[in-house]
Length: 137
Image (cartoon, one colour):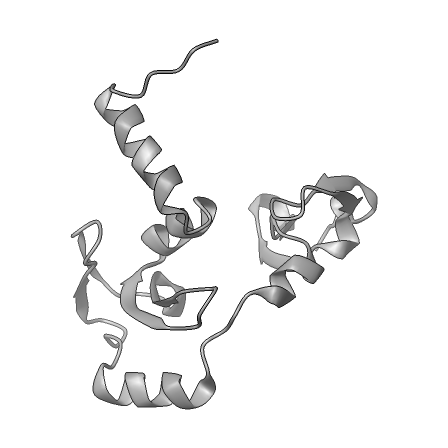
């Protein structure tokens, strides 16, 4: 795996500080085995609440994720997919409180994360898509 970005500077989406690439956790492997790092530095990412393991077990017991080969309809995008990989379905939760919201597709989970779970940003995105967001330059 090549990681040429490890020594480059990168801006943290949360704290808005420029930091070395090594201060951002590896997130996945991209095209040509390129390492892709999180958009949030390790320090800011550590502040996000995770799902309590006990609550996760209880939730999954009562609301199991579809197994590989089973169909799943995402409650947000309403696309029905046959689950082929583990990371296609995510147990979504509030990163401020740790409260579980439920199973959604990986694409919707990533999108919510990219909007930083900010309802006002999502509302502006809706207005943008409708052509009703008035921007003055």
